[in-house]
Image 1 (cartoon, helix red, strand yellow):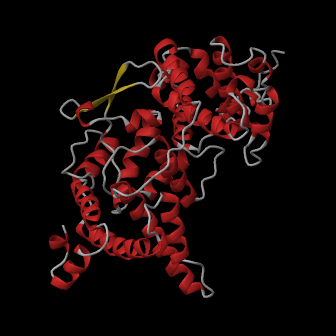
Image 2 (spheres, rainbow, N blue to C red; image 1 turned 30 degrees about the vertical axis):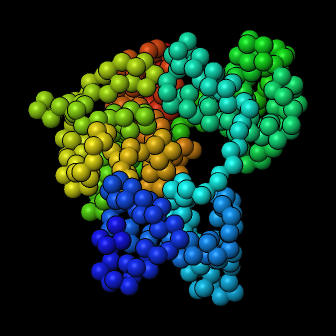
Image 3 (cartoon, rainbow, N blue to C red; image 1 turned 180 degrees about the vertical axis):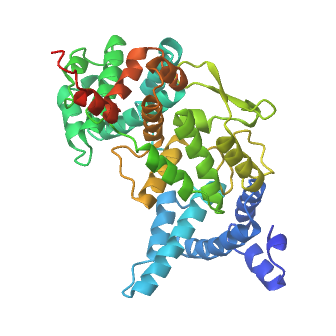
Amino acid sequence: MFDKLYKNPKTIARHKNTPFAEELQQFLNERARQGYSMGYLKTSAKALLAAVRRLSAQLKAAPTLKQIRSVLNKWCPPDTTLERRRYRQKAFRLLAQVSTPWAPFLKQLNQPPQPNPFTGLLEDYARWRDQERGHSSLSIQIGTRDLRAFLLWYKRRGRPFSAIRIQDVDAYLTSHNAWCRTTVATHASVLRSFLRYAAGRGWCAASVAPAITGPRIYSHEDIPIGPSWEEVGQLAKHLDTKRPADIRNRAMILLFAVYGLRSSEVTRLRLEDIDWENNRFSIRTSKQHRPVQYPLVPSVGNAIIRYLQMIRPKNTPRREVFLSLFPPYGPISHGGTFDIVSRCMDALGIRPPQRGPHSLRHACATHLLSKHFSLKEIGDLLGHRRVKTTQVYAKVDMPHLHEVAAFDLGGVL
């Protein structure tokens, strides 16, 4: 690999004679296989060369990952001048980015395991939700993430899971001062469900789960939560540029806004799901797990074609339509779609109560309601099984509510 990156024999020899040269080459070969550019590989090799020299000089025994980070922190300490501080921060970010994935290639690296005694409980609960309750994979993933954070917090108390008390749950929920009422209520609901299941399995006392109460959240108190349809139009127009990120993000945002799709439905969209000959595409809904076909309107179809032809990498085996812009190319996560939509809104100063993909789903439903589509038609588009679920959008059709309020009965009453 060094022979491919450099032409100067002295530079090649300097890299080949460095400590851990074999492991360094393994790391670079793996990155090359994943599609990283030669420029990135050359920058990585240069940073790693400097890092391993300091590691080998200061760490004689087999280093742990914590020791490696400690050495890199000492190598890039804060400086007095702003220019030097920015330079060192940039150097450290590069080394942290490069060294962390490279660390597993060090044969002498000894990473002490950090066992979590509650891992089996989480796996059993997630399996039950999947096989017995039929919850979506995204819901299970988010719930498991929240529960893992709680269990790691509880592990530091040094008590067995069977000794968990309602005071522990209250202490955890009140320890996060930055959480809003909705977030606290969500975590309380997740913990209540998990501890109810745990009590049924005999893992903890049955009295804990019923005692968990979160803050009171009034039904639909944050309606409307999405941007106006005019703001959605501004968003699409703002992204109509030649920047690779804008081209990809515009296609995704149009799918969210025009069809009211959920985040997981867009990220799971595959190349074979689009029928270009018949101008339609199909998705498998996140909650009902059933295939649904949609007509591919020209504006959305053209945005996707532009992304596929100009931006999406050609040499990747991945079948998902929307991929990351940089290698290793992979599908965009649920959190990634939220960051994309919220950043685009921030750039235009759009500040709805919610700024993620789900806010565009609300904007889509509200727009259709203003165009006099029935709740049944809107519910069919959004994948709602009950009209009651769609009735919430009647609350946000304020212009029509004003018309009702201003209606003159002409002396009938």
